[in-house]
Length: 211
Length: 99
Image (cartoon, rainbow over all chains, first blue to last red; front, side, top):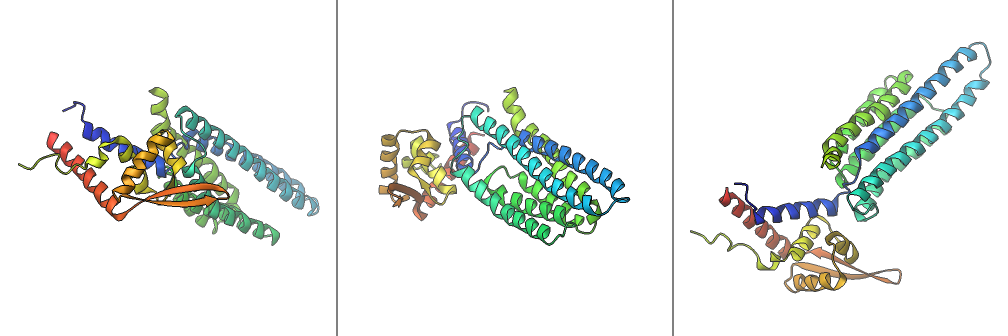
């Protein structure tokens, strides 16, 4: 029977209100995609710097090695700002299209729960850098970011939980192969974000564009 | 045969009261403005339905302050949770009977 069923409509309304009031559902797949592309570009630039530096530092003293470290940190900051900017733009755009508020108690809860592990991770990485310990920076970034996603998944689309679990796994494996850190970092922040973004876009946003 | 709509709760007939209960069931505490925004209502309209739900013992009201501004938050009571769960079950049964 395909007739109008008021009970079913009521239940659908209840479900929609429960979701909308407790989860931030405007997260856009394009946000993940753009963050992934930023990360891959960043990783590519870092890779080319490191390669050219290795060639020269064989013949020179250690001075340029220190210089490239500062440049890498600056590059990481630029990539982070660009990724956050694009992510915010696409999510803001989606919220606006669906007539949903971008800043309400669901986005507040999402942000707070994302920021707790993320801030801890940020300070942890700063601590590593201050000890001149570079080998585990990529690992720490991946693990803390993964934990942040798992924690935040309770307050937004549940799919980011799986992304989080994969980031954690990748970060832990990376601990045993620190010499390939840049590749792990590129897979975790670049490739996984792009795959996740495409899946999310396919699952949630495409219907909205078509319809 | 049992009356199929006998278990439906009259208080939740109103879409607004049903909406308030849906929101409060999944959130510990929601303030007046967030409810208003979620349900797309005016102050007066929402207030009268909240009073109704409070008088029936389904929701609790907490009056507080953020700085100097009043901040009234609402939460669901045990009785409210039970009544709403029964109402949803009755709705589900009605759908099963249609199929």
